[in-house]
Length: 72
Image (tube, rainbow, N blue to C red):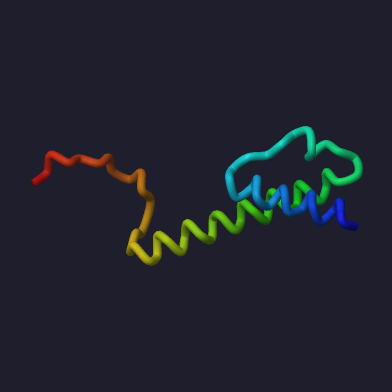
């Protein structure tokens, strides 16, 4: 059980960082726990980004229009 929790936590950290270790993900013993952790980490990172966007008042896509600093 401890190995599964360690793999899940490693996956969560990697997922939040936008990384996935294919070697651990394919491990027959702890790969599934790692992959679930990766998914949970990515979801947590998405929620964090959405919270920051809400605090800053950002609405819509950041890519709708290019940044043009010459408009003054």
